[in-house]
Amino acid sequence: MKQQPEVYLFGQILGTHSFLLKDGFLQPDEYAEIREQYFLPGGETGTAATVLSSLGVNVRIAGTWIGTEVAPMLKAFYSDKRVDLSPLHFMEDDPGVMDYVVIAGLVRSPMGRFQALFSSGKRWWSVPKEADLMSCKAAAIDPFFGEESLLAMALCQRHGIPYVTIDSPDDAPLHQNAAVNVVSKECTTQHYADMAPEEVMKRLMETASGLVILTQGGGDMLYGRRGEAIHRMKPFSVEVKSTLGAGDTFKAGCVYGLLHGMSDDGLVRFASACSAIAISRFPLPLHPPTPDEVQALIEHKE
Image 1 (cartoon, rainbow, N blue to C red):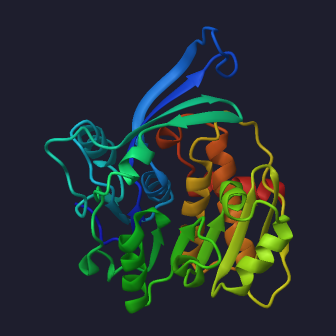
Image 2: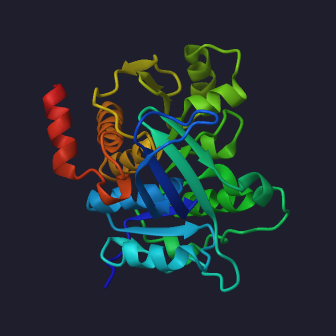
């Protein structure tokens, strides 16, 4: 029996076909040997749920409709984990949303049909329900699902539930009302192409009611709040096996820190350690970070 959820996650949940190559990344007209391949839960919300479950958190997830090819894998994978699938909508006439990711160390290329899905004019995700989140203590909301993402935000506000979001620009309500907004290099390239990271941070902090974190891959993380100076923290140094799920794991670490009332420094450090462990192994869903591993890495750095 699933225990009462502590955290509500709303967003992208899908089946990920991942391929770890043996000898470097794909080259045109050249053969590539696959070292390992898997079909496992993915997406920003799916991966975060896996990580939070491993960290000992009871999670309830909602978002992407689950199709006939994804459902059996998803149900089997989460059957012994702290993840409540009850809000999910399972389709009976569609294989479901999947992506395909080719990986070689620091380099990866995802493939899918998301542009076609988002331009179809059809909704292929659930509408958040108040009953699913009102007893939770923290949440995370992916920004991809338009009015439904904003509804999840409004429900969190109604019940005083702090939430983490990702890649929301300074003029977005999800950013402005978030307890934590984690902004990646991909987001800054899209929305702030000609601005230095410090200028992006200042702009984000001016409209934030919570903590803003700017991640830069192997570079320093920048973080801070409105009216504060910008803080910096170096990421943990580990041997990289795969970067797939690194950002989603960082988000999960932020949710965990929010749930447990960590300081800003502590939350960023914890999330960074989670992400570092994630990139040191493959596949992440079968080897997510545990609390003891995260604490050991933090203590080793200190």
